[in-house]
Length: 141
Image 1 (cartoon, rainbow, N blue to C red):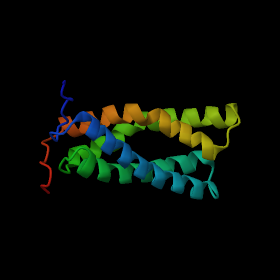
Image 2: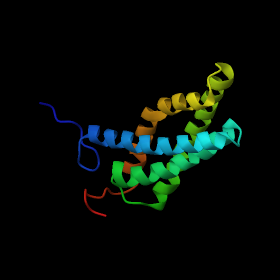
Image 3: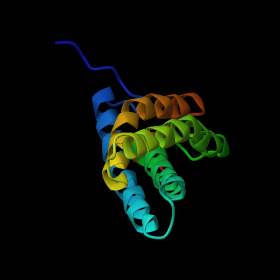
């Protein structure tokens, strides 16, 4: 039997990815709700940008404390949104292609944008939380 690779917190990598997916679903649900609400009063690109920001805030909190079990640091806090800047640009472009080019409703198109970003996000976040400081042990603050 082959052991699974360990995550920085000492558990299997699959467990870390599962936590990442749950945290992602929570932050995605929050940002999707913000997007749909803001879409009522703002252009889709402005609604997307603000919803994206709300998702970043939710995601940082969940990923830092639960997914990667890392201590908070100003370096991570600064790197976290920077890592998402390329995704914001690519996501906005993909949203435009899906809505203006293919005629999908913005509420549906944004779900495709989110799904396309998951694997890339996991790899980037893993690097940020592994390379920028120590790991806290499970159960320690």
